[in-house]
Length: 254
Image 1 (cartoon, rainbow, N blue to C red):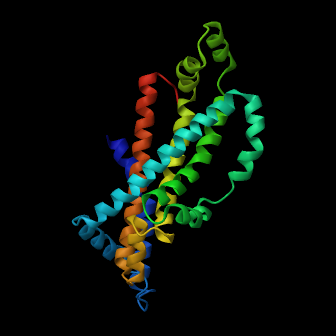
Image 2: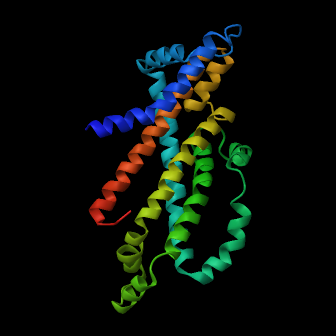
Image 3: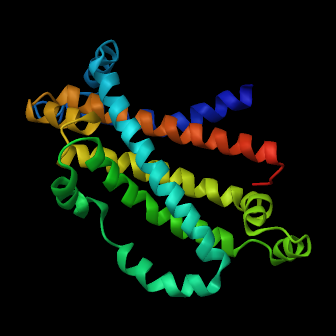
């Protein structure tokens, strides 16, 4: 128990030091400017916002859209990645297309998505799905390629069908790497969802932060920024907890 407390204190040392330095700067060196509020004021504003419904509604919209986009992009990306990883010929055929489309910034699709879907969930969902599709595809393809050949030989010897081979042999061997892809996809989905809301979609946490900035309410703007960071940390921690639980249940070594 003492070791865990010490580890937690060490992990918190740098963020606390950084916030303390910013607090000092905002109250002294930056005192002549109203552009940024001190961290303590932003945290007080955040606590007040937590008591209202607006923060939770905006958070629910952003997380819901990010989750749906990640689900769509992840299912398509992992499915196609496994197929390309298990079939060298398919991988070679799809290489050029992937390398041409993958570098396109997801935010560059916002104007196109606006033309097709207008404002709302579907526009943001399409951009998030595009952003998460490519890393999930590339990482799952690499994970499928790294499955031990002896496992595939065992599957062939047992005369397993392609579906059974993937479900019983390939997927369990890919679990640790798939969760790396999942955690990366979660982070990308949240970042892109907030970015779309800042740039174009009048909903969610990103839009709320923009409204605070336009209202010159720096305390509320920073409160939203802190809240987005806290939310991202909590989601990553939940994904890591899920990964460890699944690995224990399947008897897979990370």
